[in-house]
Amino acid sequence: MGGGCGSYFYWELGYSFIRMAVHAEISIVTISKRGDTSMSNEVAAAFNAIRKVQGIKATLTALGTQVEADSIDDLLTAVKAAHAAAKAAGAERVISTIRIDERLDKAQTLEDKVRSVERKLQQ
Image (cartoon, rainbow, N blue to C red):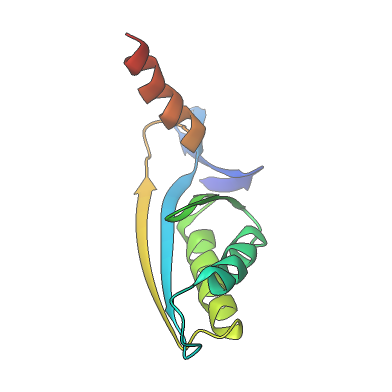
């Protein structure tokens, strides 16, 4: 049986519970008729919409948004919200690239993944 708890999803495995999260990177490209190549207005609107979705932790980067979600459903809700916000900000076309990491054997945050690599760099 799984259930939402805090900002992570828990799965019952035998007698123990493992804190689960779905990680993703969402990148959008917008096209509008403004006549310039800037996408920052639409990207800002999309990021703002993503971070307002319950169960989502979002981190803005130069080339996309890193997301920790309680479930794939929450993640897809965030993608839908990003598309709607980008269109409301003037985009006439929105192209998304989404990479999803759903690890079931170990609880790990995005920060944990970075620290793991940093420790190996120290060796």
